[in-house]
Image 1 (cartoon, rainbow, N blue to C red):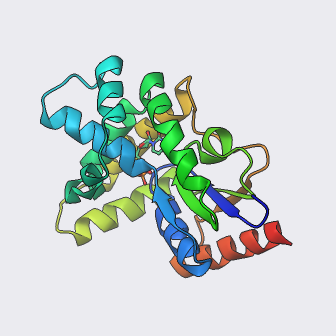
Image 2: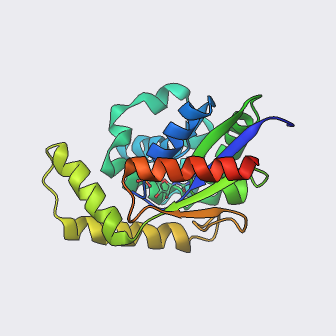
Length: 211
Ligand code: CDP
């Protein structure tokens, strides 16, 4: 415990939390766990095998058998995997199956940076620093649309905005570990910030938390 620094980063889709979390980890020399990848892998495996995403028990079995190798699938970074993730992430037994490995990761000696939806509220309630990264749905939809277009995928802004609103509603409305800031989280709204600005603001929050 003592000197170990756990930084919990939560927030909605496309708010910039992944970039901020990865850069904070580098800056503070801490290991980084993108917990969304776990849910993405489970959703992807279920879909690939043709299983029903609403089957909580089955999804939990996949979660318990998750292999680190499963996280290397390049398709997991994509937009579709995010949607699949959000479908399996509503199931309490799936979430329960992933708690221990996330906590073990966070308990490492120097500390760790974890990003997700419930890190500050459920996984690491004692984290020294908690940041809730958010931005307006319109800004997030614009960023995600530009990102997909840059990868050569033709998608309409309106479609993405609709999906973001739907995902926000699903993530915030579920009964287990809904997306919400921890009472002691610092809210970082990146709507008016570029990547650099958002990173600098996050470093400032960590430093204030350590002081
Ligand atoms: O950046 P983006 O939100 O698109 O992706 P992500 O962080 O990988 O999360 C994808 C989905 O996984 C979210 O919409 C959540 O439903 C779920 N998730 C979760 O429930 N809990 C976590 N700790 C991380 C992700």
